[in-house]
Length: 282
Image (cartoon, rainbow, N blue to C red):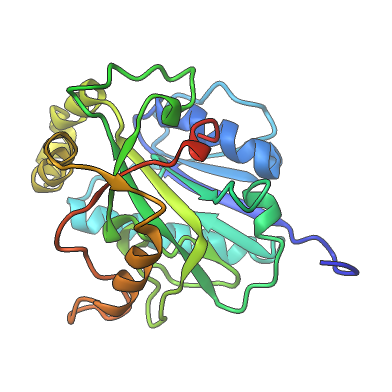
C-alpha cells in the first residue's frame, strides 16, 4: 500500500482449562503481529497463566457457569464488545476460538500479516474452514513441539468452520463466530481457517470425559465433533487445491434457509489432503 500507513491489527481469543492450544496461538500470532497485539481472555480467576512473553495481554475475568447455549452467547457478546473497544486503537481485529488458526495461502503470500495490509471493502471476511483430524490408521499422537500440519495430512472441508473472523470495523458476531448479525459474509479466496480441536484422538477423549462440559450440555456437540475421526478414516481424500474454489462457491450459494448469512454445508462431507505448502506454517 504505497503512501498508506500500515494497518494495526489485533487478535483476540478466549480460553478455559487449556494449556495445549494456547502456546500455538501465542507463537503463531505473536510472530505475525507482535505479542503486544494479542489479547487472551481467560475464563475464570482459577485459570493458570500461560508461560508466554510478558507483553501478551492476558485478561482474567470472573467465571460464570452457564448452559452451553447461554455460555456461547455470553462469550460472543463479551468478545464483540471487547473488539468494539479495541477498534479505538486498531484498524482490524481477528477473533476466533483458541483451537483455530487463520492462514493466508502461502502459495501467494509471505504471511497473514502481509496479506491483510491490502484494502478490504467488507466489514468482515470469512476463511474457508478446514477441520483437521487424526487419521487413526496412518498417524500417531501429536507432538505439540512440532508444527501440527507436519503431522496431520487430512481435513474435512466444513462450513461449520468457515467463520467471519476478520473484522474491519465493529461488528456483532453470532455464537461461535459462525456469522455476523445482520450482515452478509464474504469467503476470501486466499484465507483458510484450520480447526485443530480434533487434531489428536487422546486429547479429544479427555475433553469428551470432562464432566463440567457434559453437565453444561456439551455432549451432543462433542459427539458430532468426534465423528470426524471416522469420517477421515473412511473417506477417500481428494486433492485440496482441486476443490477449494468449488467449496467456497458452493458454501456461498447454498445457504441454510433459517440463516442466510451463514455458509451452507457440503452434503457429501468432503475430506481433502492438505497441500504440502501448509506443512511448516502451523
